[in-house]
Length: 330
Image (tube, rainbow, N blue to C red; front, top):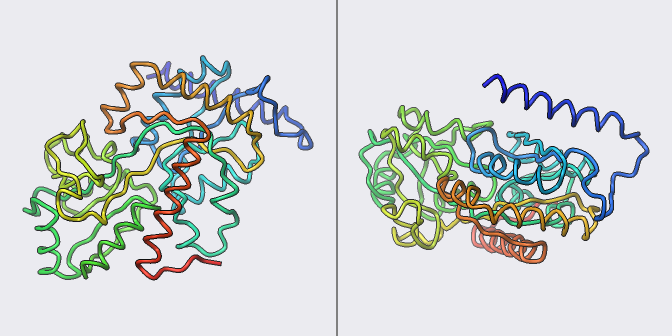
């Protein structure tokens, strides 16, 4: 434990010193042949224990060896993902990278005024890492065994149930589910959604929709029941849990891609070099196995392929917004 703390402090000190040495007027944009020139900071929209945090820490040691510079993982939860995204956009630094699911930012134009950034231009794709498996769970004490039973129970107890949901796309999809099924539940706002599974197990809230990776520990304790995986088919890591399509609720499909994004002026050749390192790290069996065990099957994508996946996520959100009569904010 002491060695881990010492290593973390040392890494942070190196990063801080590098930032101090960089003069204010120094150009932040590097060239592919000498990138990275100093420590790389991965900013996450969630805290410790989240799927993104698990994946980032699995990759960081490998990337440090491949890139030849320290890789620091920093969670900045809160603000519906805006805090982490703005941290990257405003830094305008090729060594400050967003690491998280596409779901953390693609819905921002539909739910927030005065974003201060454009999700379609101010974040540039670097590489895809894994498919994020979202799941829905209830406390076992609720006595609900399926999504259809949950709908019936909620209608029989209007406004009596409360829920926690991962910000961004997951919440967007869940709000559509509530509206389409005429369900009334109270949202419990979490600054960090990874704090919700213990509350769910204790029955303080009655439903959670978030990454399956972050709720597995509570599932193993035995006090919550995962009703469904929010995908078109069952997960290899949880073959006994039905998909939302199988459960009869295809509109609940939410399967974002976990990946890295740079600021808008990060050169393409630099992004491609960074992506090459990520793709190399994703060949490691320990990384592949760790991601699979956390419920995040590896999905390696280079710049172009990941860009296409992000574009598709934007299209899907626009489609849902149209169905729900939600207009894009100005």
